[in-house]
Length: 307
Ligand code: PPE
Image (tube, rainbow, N blue to C red; front, side, top):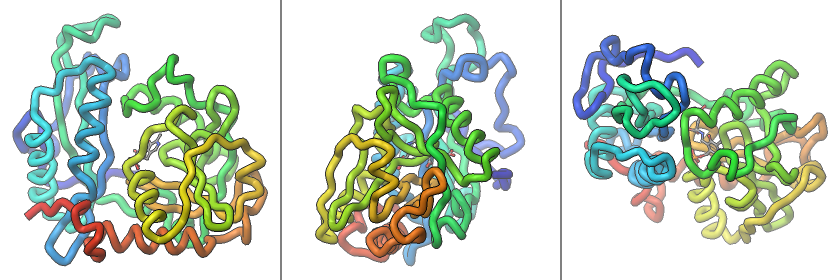
């Protein structure tokens, strides 16, 4: 996805010009993946840009930092305000928001603890993650030969930059095979999640999603969708399941900030249910899109207005 520049990026507490937002090539995180980050979306609402669950995303950023013993030199409130400032400065009505906390320049070697901690927040326009067709008709996925790591190999619950080379292997395998994206298994072989999305399957009136112990990122969208599904009267179970369970599901979909709610139309060349977006997925997807755009009173507290 080519980046479309905007005017400003927030770096270490100040808005700087986009082209000045650079780092040294000996930045620790570039060599060792020692950064933690977030992905957030701001949507156009009747009251101006609203950042969806901004505070919850920033809380996860602090939890990811805690796992890697990174002290973020700003408070939660300062990070929230920094994100709003960056969205405001962009002049965009809707955008993707990317806060990153990373070990900077000044130390080499595997001990990261003496390297400085830098913080940046970038925003840019980002359309549908897997394309408009996937959002409407569903994505074609493979189950990757690359698995998620055991949480004692890499803590999958922390959103660390270095961990994404694992997702990248699965994504490339899928794209090279002509698919839209990949699902990944846990080390013991249950379904975990997509390369950058959480996973749900639907059986009659029940939604099933893998638990944290399957080695997933605890998605904010996964949480929003769970709440929405309950409110719509569906049962939601956190349960491990295997590949034949998704082949035989009535419906399946992916959730993520970038992917939003993306139906799954095919897994490993097998059509899921009707082979297109199912009715439960459609209902949840439409409710989610109304919520993020500030159109539903009961979810208004999720929308954090910039102005
Ligand atoms: N699992 C993984 C591995 C993951 O990267 C994401 C977000 C999720 C689940 C869903 O989490 P949440 O966004 O809180 O619902 N992936 C981000 C990265 C996208 C990218 O390509 O970069 C995102 O959706 O922003």
